[in-house]
Length: 297
Image 1 (cartoon, rainbow, N blue to C red):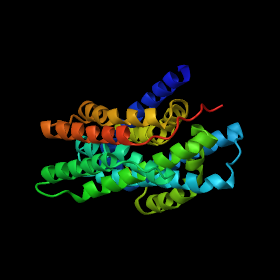
Image 2 (image 1 turned 45 degrees about the vertical axis):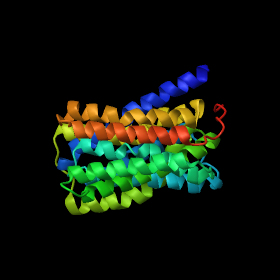
Image 3 (image 1 turned 180 degrees about the horizontal axis):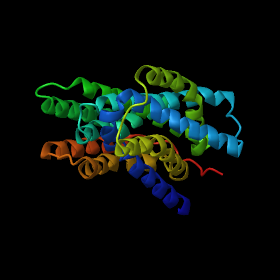
Image 4 (image 1 turned 120 degrees about the horizontal axis):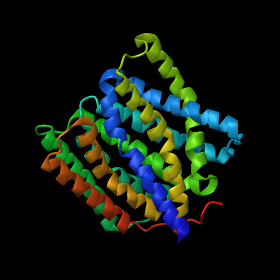
């Protein structure tokens, strides 16, 4: 019980860190650009991961885990950061929080597909209802039809869901810390090449100290530090508990959007967020969870 409580607290810390990601990105994108942020945050986090590997002399994971680590890297280090950064050029952070609120439900769906679970019909109804709620919200906010940026956010959500689900699976075997550590190390070469091209063609972007501060946040906190308590909490408390904690992230993000960006959260946005959270919660409650994991040694 002590380890489960510790795991829940650590996972909550991870959720708190992640909840600032969208408003931080929205604050930095207008000055630094989505390409720089999308690729740059992974490069910075990857270099930190390489330094940690060198200091700790951590051995590279066995070859059988490389595919899983590559999936994690593609989803949470490349896919989500890049597509969300482009979406946030035009979408408010509060609006984006509603769409990204699908992440827990999408993660549950990907976990089902990865581990071969056979959920009952209510699970799929809840998942579909969440998608419909987001599309209706995007259509209303977009003067009758969803914007292209909404599609980019949905792609980002799918990337994050795949990365979360696969990371959850292999964290049971190699530990949560090593999952994000080596996923970042693996993706550094693939991020560095486009980053060099961006700097060569556009130069170092000019931004205020505030913009660079928020870039540092998404690179260091969102891309690296937040995953340490999140995956550790997942190992200690189990997938069934930690996945439900992500349900509070959209509400936290709405709060940060007001505090950091001064955005106005409309009644429609708040209502849509609550509906999406409810649908995501239903996917967790109707999913046939795996047996709880034993604590990491």
